[in-house]
Image 1 (tube, rainbow, N blue to C red):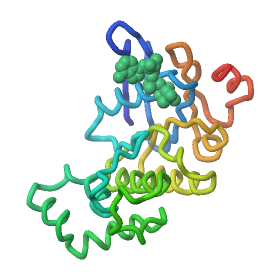
Image 2: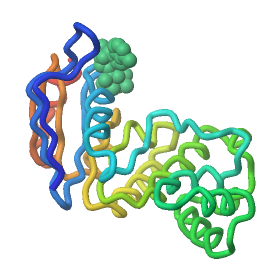
Image 3: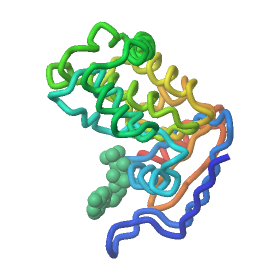
Amino acid sequence: MLHFQAARLGFGDQTVLADIDLCIRPGDRIALLGKSGAGKSTLLAAVRQAQESQCAWCPQAPALVPGLSTYQNVFTGGLQRHNALYNAINLIRPWPDRLAEISALSKPLGIDTLLHAPAGELSGGQQQRVSLARAAWQQKPWLLADEPVSALDEQQAEAALGWLLERHRGGLVALHHVALAQRLCNRVIGLRDGRVLFDKPIHAFSPADQAALYQ
Ligand SMILES: Nc1ncnc2c1ncn2[C@@H]1O[C@H](COP(=O)(O)OP(=O)(O)OP(=O)(O)O)[C@@H](O)[C@H]1O
């Protein structure tokens, strides 16, 4: 189980969220919902900071290194697992095993044919899929993701995020699309007015909950 507690999260004098007490249990696929500015990224960043060694991270913007290839960008997800020499060799002249592993990892995301393409030449959706593969390559037990499939069409988004969630013990994912959250997640946390408005199973998420969050 991953536990995170904070009396207050914010920036300087501004309190973004208060009284956070969050448990992510094995099997939890938690959709984090709330209006723009509700504090989803702030919460994810704080959980990440507190539990970095346990959590894979998929950011809102892919932030790939444009001059590096898809393979190299994915590989950077696992730099912390190895020493500098191993990393340098596998970045410059990848061992066939590494290339094969990252190719296999990239296949379900449809980017295995782009392994040698510079990330700067990929479309927004392709870059986002590289970012998902990089998160998977971190090989951490839990997933934290901030709008990880916003640049993908509905079908691709569901397949790609479903794939990433399956590779983790549990996950907390900020999403804008309620329908996607309902298809992929089993629990929902709603943020509003600086606090957790509800934390419930997704099947109990009602139109009234949705209205309370976004109106
Ligand atoms: N680096 C920062 N410095 C100061 N204030 C910030 C910073 N980042 C976010 N904020 C403020 O914190 C509040 C919550 O922002 P946050 O990015 O967590 O919201 P969000 O729910 O993730 O929004 P979105 O859906 O638009 O990404 C907002 O009022 C925002 O202006």
